[in-house]
Image (cartoon, rainbow, N blue to C red; front, side, top):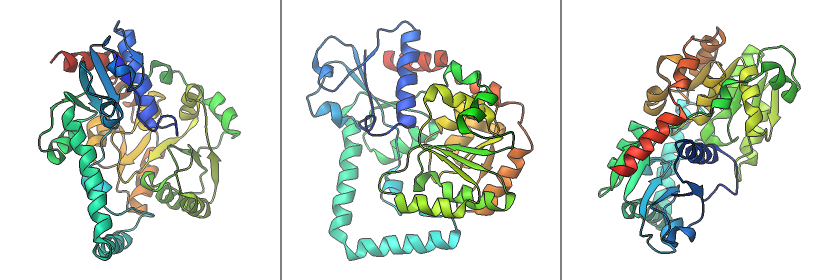
Length: 342
């Protein structure tokens, strides 16, 4: 079996890299002969399954493999990709930006045509796969809605690595250079979709440190400066090795990710494994994964984010470890193998 990583894996580290590594490891632990490779290697003829993460065209441009082609698309809906970019929270701003976005397409219809055609081509390429693997029932529904003649779709939940359950809070504070004061953590790229600006604005009256761990988004330096201006107390860390992140999760009072859109939120799952209370966007995929052990917020409302943080700061719900352990590598491997066999 050949697993091909997301096309952006060499550019920046994120959930797509974590998901790829966890899937590969889960299959290997289940006794499957699985290895990482490239689109060219998919044509070698010595594999039964080619499992692609991201855009399947990175394989198909070299030719159609004889093996079963499965794709984990890490799917963002076409309506979202073709919609407005949100630079900050606020419902009045949301209405203004939607109107401005619609007007921009009226002024430049050719640009919209080519944009939509590119998105449609990417979606249609998924029809050339034999199997699509969604990380949630909500993502599976989006795939069926956007792709008229989609191949078979199976839901395979993400898993959390066993090492994430053994975080040391003291080591985490040492890595960050912080004392015993409670702090709010967000492990994600610092970009508009992840919505750290709402987090910074929500925390300003609470006088708590905000720790952002993750690389900056591409061409979003101005946005990052806005986050720095909004945060009263900010610690910005570009990168911490993934093996060390478990300690940082364990040291945090709360992990928050009020994204405008998220497939599932692997960082949130890892924070739960450390027993840390979490705040996430109120969306179907997050409800499906985190149930009643997370505090949910509306990403466009700073007040909603602040109230969710205050509830989370009261302490863990007691179900964090139970929920995290339900997303085991054994479960992921079993779901994958069942999908391949089907």
